[in-house]
Image (cartoon, rainbow, N blue to C red; front, top):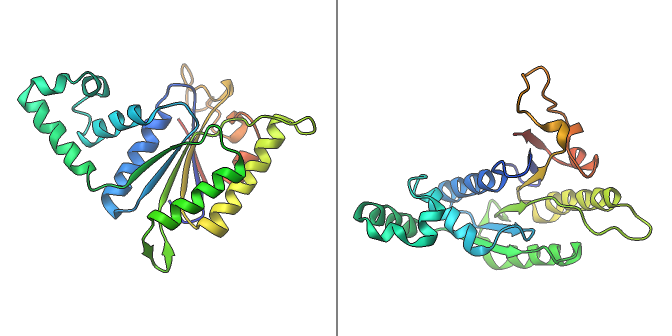
Length: 212
């Protein structure tokens, strides 16, 4: 992750895009003690992400389902693991915001306020990490089509993080059917941005992309 760059993970539905992004963010929080802002497009609640984060900090030994039901309390060993994970979480700055109903200007305003309120100055810049989960189509207007609106958003997002936020952004995208990898060998898997749904501009604005 580099300042001002957008990293993208593309995959089909229910392939672990959110989990992978959270793993990357949690690892960086642990190593560099930087705050993370998780921007959710209404797919998951704060509680669901808290369960996933705790599961990650338990190194996968405790599942989110076990955490949610409270069954982990019935076993001294699992209780010890969860208690240790929760203790670690106390030292992390991982913030959640549902931005599914925000306009682009409102989204950028939220990011400005977060940077001002939560970020420490490192190397002359207020540093933080952003996880935008995930790229979804915006409502089209009478004059612009859906892919055009999203294309303009991606360009604005790139310029905003590059010139103003100067922070790394990790995001994800659901690919179309040409990106399916099951029952294919390496020579027939489409790893280009042809598999990206919604807009060609997505591939143009990201600095690094991977297809799962």
